[in-house]
Length: 171
Image 1 (tube, one colour):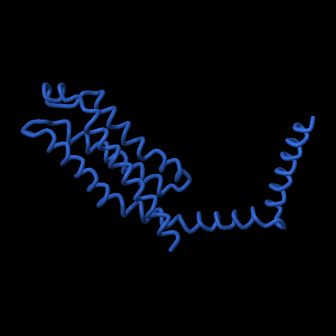
Image 2 (tube, helix red, strand yellow):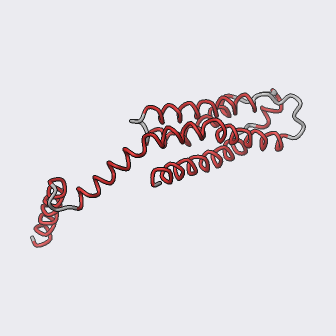
Image 3 (cartoon, one colour):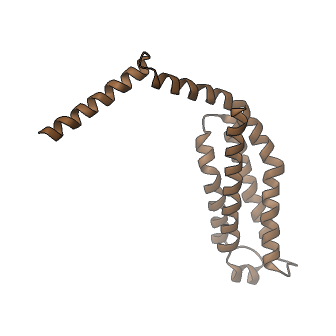
């Protein structure tokens, strides 16, 4: 149960970050003059969109870097979202209302993440999470039990640091 809550919290946070970064990228970073003139996005706009999507996924990829299945699923989702944004926005032919088009692209990108990658990432995280929770639980138990060597070393280190601080204050 704790594993499912842990995974759901991370996925909800990722989706909210993705949505807010897509809003910033699609509404703030597009060079509309170039887009309307050339009928496609300029390189700077594409780089800005890629940067926003990368900045959304990077913390999660780093957090799960040692779990290959989760890291790979997050990486595939990141690349697919960037490519889909590029393909959907790069062609302006037939678009009468740019705001409606951009809103529809954002909605479709979120739906793509929800339907294609949420279940894959969720399953990969759920597979790995029990091990993570066991390690965290054991670490909390070890670091708080003075009879355990880990806790003893921590307490001695803290005692030495406090003793040094007291010596410097009294001198």
